[in-house]
Amino acid sequence: MTNRRTGRLRLLAAAAVCVALAASAPGQRGAGDPGHGNGGGGGEAAQAEGPRGAPARVTASTTTTRPATTTTAPPPRTFTLVATGDVLLHSPLWAQAEADAAAAGHPGRDFAPLIAAVRPLVEGADLAICHLETPIAPAGGPFSGYPVFSVPPEVVPALVTTGYDACSTASNHTYDQGGAGIDRTLAALDAGGLAHAGSARTPEEAARLTIVDAGPARVALLSYAYGFNGIPAPDGQVWRSNVIDEGRILADAARARDAGADVVVVALHWGTEYNHDPDAQQAALAPRLIASPDVDLLLGHHAHVVQPLENVGGEWVVYGMGNLVARHSTQGDANHEGLLVRFTFTEGGGRWTVTNAEYAPLLMITDRAPMRVLDVDATLASGSAPELTDRLVTARDRTAGIVASRGAVAAGLHPVAA
Image 1 (cartoon, helix red, strand yellow):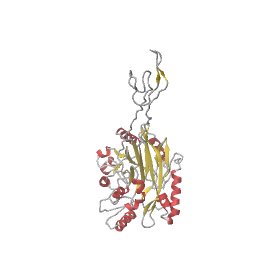
Image 2 (cartoon, one colour; image 1 turned 120 degrees about the horizontal axis):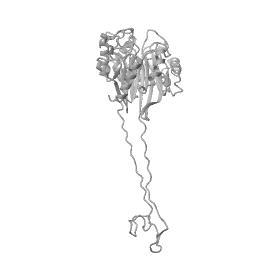
Image 3 (cartoon, rainbow, N blue to C red; image 1 turned 180 degrees about the vertical axis):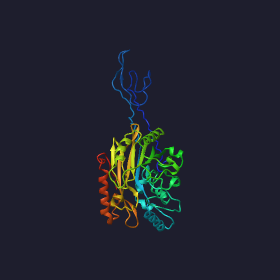
């Protein structure tokens, strides 16, 4: 699919030739033809004839040259990738969406105001990836939250409005509504023009790779989950969603590279809920996956709190981005905090590598109306919510400490400029 904001860039280089006119040869005047006494054009050379047969003595000469020109190499090709945490809709959030729709004078639910604060960063990227954790319900419901989710379909148009291009869909809740829930979810994403990876409607779709255009590059998105909360595959159709398996992931990444992907991104629903530290699976598997020449970036979800970033061998692992939106019954400051990451990839030496790694701390405000996601640094810089200053500073500082805890800042990670 063609990225709707940028398209594929074509760069051409032009060469220039420098021409030098030689000095007048003996027996000629100026730059005239051989055998003629008169030179053509200006800059004649004065000559004194010597004895017959002797070469003329040149007393003056000129050389005409055109100014040299240089060929400027085109700038390296780049693209930016943005990713955010879990889209996890609990019932208070769809009540907020109903209130926002009513305030705008239309029926139904409008989730776009809930996440509008991240729109400048999301829509400014060449490729923006969300993680849709829960299945989509029929248009009229019924809707349900934890522990078996079925969420309003209006969330998809909100993701489109915010600027997302693709969503990973493999999570521990993928099977919550069986095969019908998967079918509805992927149909809704298709209708919104969002690419998706991680679950499937048919075996053929399960075997296909998701490769999208991101500016000048082609990016593969792969998605896997640690499990499905003990819910069996619908009708035994184990191809319905992808489980984390090292051999399968590496094989899929190699297939994606062979299919023409310049960059391969692997989204992993993993980790221990409400734990900032990577668990045993994350710590063991991440270095092995990112060491593959076919894997360029790991994006983690599921823990519902922010986890560290780490640069391993020059490539980035995002262990967990917390939530983009959620309103857990288990309340706690840390599970209201999330993370947006932005990576700039640059082409060079025959491959694409990350040349700039950035993050923005996010905060989900749920204890007052209207509920909103806030870009922490941008809100502090604007001074638009002075009553939240202490809470924003706490979120900023806690997030900064967590993301840096495995050496990411020393490796070049820094906050997005507010």
